[in-house]
Length: 128
Image 1: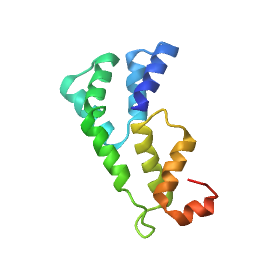
Image 2: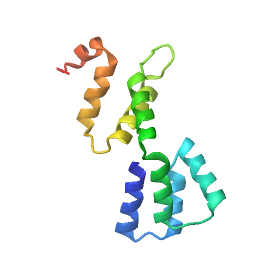
Image 3: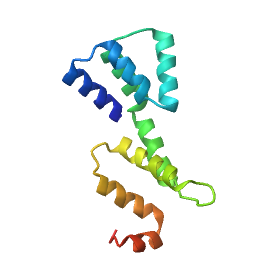
């Protein structure tokens, strides 16, 4: 939900008009979120940011969504035969950031190292 805060900041700091907010949504949203936004726009037409924000929060910031994100993070195990390291890492980082937007980078790194196994932890020199 970080993009909601970014849009609010743009709106507040730069007094963004709706057309600029919509333009930012096109560049900030990806994959499923972008498809859902386009579908919502097609079904409901143009609305102001407060309405869009409310719909986005209703769709993604609920207990069911949080549970899916937590389960996805917990069950994700890196497989060197199947996963590209950077892609896998960034996906897990995005999940953690979505669940806890105020989590520091160092805490994210610690949680990620814990998922990677003892060999990598020893190589990193961390006491995780």
